Amino acid sequence: MGKITGFLEFDRKVEKYAPVDERIQNYKEFTLPLKEKELKNQGARCMDCGIPFCHSGCPLGNLIPDFNDAVYKGKWEKAAEILHATNNFPEFTGRLCPAPCEEACVLGINEDPVSIENIEKNIVETAFQKGWVVADPPEFRTGKKVAVVGSGPAGLAAAQQLNRAGHSVTVFERDEKPGGLLRYGIPDFKMEKHVIDRRLEILKEEGIEFQCGVHIGIDIKAEELHKDYDAVVLCGGATVRRNLPIKGADLKGVVQAMDFLGQNNRRVDGLKYPGEDIKATDKNVIVIGGGDTGSDCIGTSFRQGATSVSNFEILGKATSERPEDQPWPFWPMRLRTSSSHKEGAERFFSISTKEFIGDKNGNLKGLITVNVAWEKVPGQRPVLKEIEGTEKEWPCELALLAMGFTGSEMTIAEQLGLEADPRTNIKASVKDYKTNVPGVFVAGDQRRGQSLIVWAISEGRQAAYHVDTYLMGSSYLPLKGEGDLPRI
Image (tube, rainbow, N blue to C red):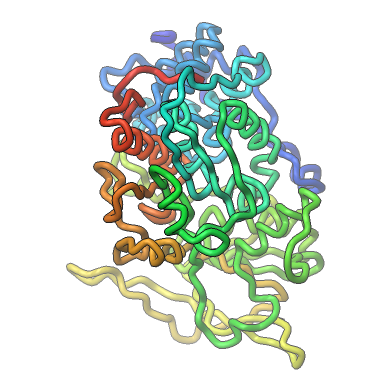
């Protein structure tokens, strides 16, 4: 497996970034690829582990040591076959995944882990450049029709797997183009949209039909869809956004992050968008929420020419090292600094927004905060306490709410009589992804709540197996860690 002493000889290397003053001038991806020799050396760092815990860290169960070994030996086509065996869209995860596999890497116990995500990205990009990723339609059709609602990573993965099984698959998307939040949420500087489009062309050549601009539950009633198809797979997102119900929340300039990001995606693509422009140009911007969405707002604000960008997080500042109560190989809640943070944002932790302040015309001009502390109570969740005397007023003309999502929109669920869980996700068993209505399945964020792209792809693949079994009595599609290798 690889070079036995590779982890002793080579240090971890990942792609560097273009200079800040250069990259914020446009919305292009800005990573600087490693040379092939450097990538082979990174593959050589993969140890011959007795138990490769990276498998368990990856929600897809990717065969990571195997493709690392192939890269080390220069067998790029073999590496691409191994990678696509468990991951339909490594070009998405290779750019956007937070890499839980790396946190589970055995080498990461006392050294820098193997740069798995960067290797993955370079494998799939090499495969596209060499023409190895091509359409491979199924050899036969079963005569069964499946509707997939939602064209994000869960929906696309479910659609490709079900199409491979020979079913006729139609994907319904309410936006004007497929991709879900990959297209209208993820900034172009993190993933340019031609990356989605080239994969969509392959899916279409394989026989998958896409109907965009069709809102299931409104344009087509869910009952009609259920009646017209042999199975329905719901793969919408957890799109109900968390609000901040404080004084001044209705002021012009207090904006949900996804409205801001989605509009900018459309602007970059030259598409029309509803409503007035939401732009950070010449404004003091405060992003409320310290996760990935908040980071995306920061990078977009700088590219729009913001005067200043600050980032508020109500939680305390995490440590850069793994916390003691989150041991390897589990995912640690450590401090993560994104490329957008490094573009000039000032970050504030343990801070809560109390009130938005407006001018006489209803425009946001500032906000008031207070510092907070989290008190631990034995046997209970930590309690938030405000610290007296810490109130502060901040100038702000654009406040972006990036505080996550509370669940799924329930129109389809209500029309079909589907059960929901306490978090307003559609209830379905992880065992078979079935809802309480026969023939209706659910996967991705709409089942498990807001989560990672890699989890969405995994859910779509797993759900497809169970849909195929429901339709045919059994399935040859692979489950995680089982079955034959699917085609690229």
